[in-house]
Length: 313
Image (cartoon, rainbow, N blue to C red):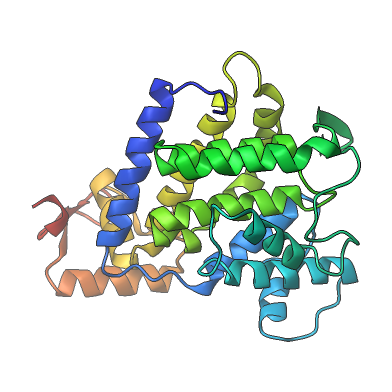
């Protein structure tokens, strides 16, 4: 079994993520659009240097031409195809892993879909933070990892993080290990809760890419991959928090702001919610007319009161 320790931080994060997933399922207004898939692809590829923007990736997805380096466009096209396979891939199948890598690296490297034949290392910028095991050991190490994955009773959240780290430690391919490893963690999680297919976790990993590589670098000691597990669970938790906020209607966001600060001004609401003055005015007037909120006191020194707060009942 891969070495790691279950810390109180890990237990707390698993609890928060499980609760967050339940809350997302419960929200009737939640609509996970393809923008999340685009964010996932953009984030995962950007970690490894791809410079294409969300708008450019959207254009590629729509079959439109973009002006960009050919190899970066190919990376995006490949990633789109790979993520479309999430419903077909078996997370416990080595053959499916090779199939996914073949698609992810098609037209980019000569040995796509095959284990590497030479030594490689994990790099963060110009620094090598980990030298992978010899190439001849890769098939056996991957088999052992997949055997563990198929037999372990560990919670899927922890199981997916351990797999992700061990996969990067083995670094089984000559290139594309990072994006394939992140795809496979998403696959493992989506078999637990399908909603993970549409959560842009990789986008948050990109936000903390330095910490991502640092977590890899400091793992492997006495505590095994515990630092990496804690980091990835933190990323998943932040992704859920961001998705919950994004999925809220403007009305819900306004109510949240009023609960936190009843004296919040229209200008402050506009800044926090990225609304124009007319937009703020429209929503406040509509909510007031419907009896949801009421403003008491003067325009300068008054405060908002929620008349019918269904969320606290």
